[in-house]
Length: 356
Image (cartoon, rainbow, N blue to C red; front, top):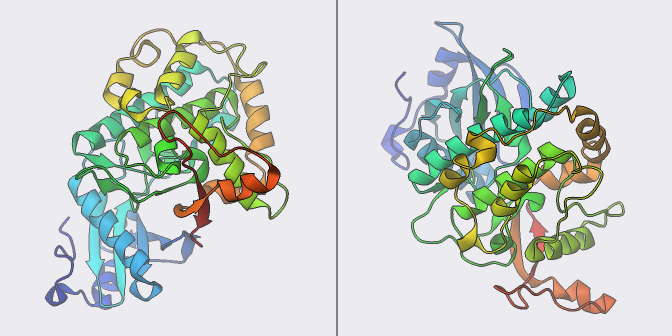
């Protein structure tokens, strides 16, 4: 299918709004995200359904940048585990991005509906994510916002594949990246510490996802009083900087040593020592028979329902963030705590400024 508009930034290539509505029925908004509205679109001539993301230029430079960035990245990629770009229209006021429609469920919902859930199921999910990320990394693309909400089943068939969505924060790694962004609970230490970073941040996020899928718990969860997100984030970031997580009993008692070893290698604090996506695919827990087939559903589901039904977590993971250059030690000094330190970012920690 030809793209409605191919050249970004060329005023002569603007589409008319009627070009969109002549080809597609957009229907009602089904979801509103930070930078865009999402519609379920129907192509009039074929009846095929797609996802349409509409970005309004009047909403500011960050919105325009996010739309352009997503278009550029999606035009570069073609992989079975990545939602594919179908069409693009750029009018004077809007960006319309049409994507394949994934009709399956989010991973959490799939787990809760299973009668039997084991490490092998998790291994299958993580393998597909690793294969997609290894492909992105081969193109020097960093996703920068991998999280469970961005992993969905392509359809509702029993053996449906997993697809990765949401590329508006993805970035080409032309030299190391400095701009920090992402979702708090999935941020790598080098992002929290405002170091230059690159592809290893995606592997850290996969480690966080794997930890959650095997235990039902986030590795760095921090309790917070209502509306006390500032202290919540400071404490959360201290834990991330230090790699302060545990394989707590009883949640990890039935999990194989191979699974724990892969999580540890994915969540290595030192980014230059972290396992790559390509290396992780060859790990025995992914490509061999090390993943246990013991049913862990009851324990995992109980913790998922306990941890992820909380509004405070939903707010945390649902909000993309940029880190401001304020020291997280501002809050620590008030409480008598020492500044955050780690062997590769001594005294460096930064508070969080949420993008609303």
